[in-house]
Image (cartoon, rainbow, N blue to C red; front, side):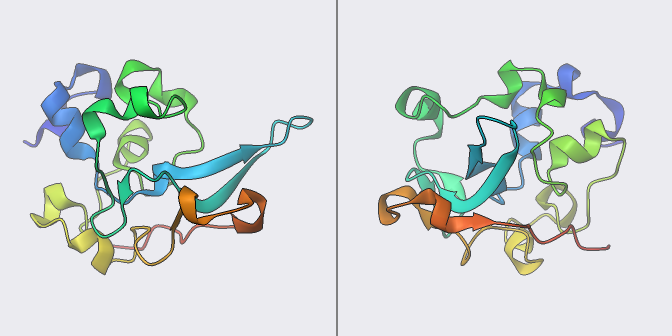
Length: 147
């Protein structure tokens, strides 16, 4: 049995938890919150620390210090993060769903995420290249593909 099929998110080791991340980069997309309604708008703008070719953080170990708004999801109640994309392995497992065939733990390859059109590569822009984040609000993210 695979660890993600037998353990809850809370029971996973740090190594197991980290291996669940498919490196899509969607959780690194900046969000804007309406102060009046609490509604969250998603943008195509990502943190400058992300490598847009690999969708990995270039300073992962220091990210929460360097970027105060960055969250270490393992340190919080993950179920509160309803804004996570529906393709996210953490969200899928929390919802009792299986990992998709493009996920690196299933496919054995990191490039299957981009091949499936799941990553933000070619879609996202870095914060340093943006004057007004509101100009980059998106109404949708591609839905998770069917297996």
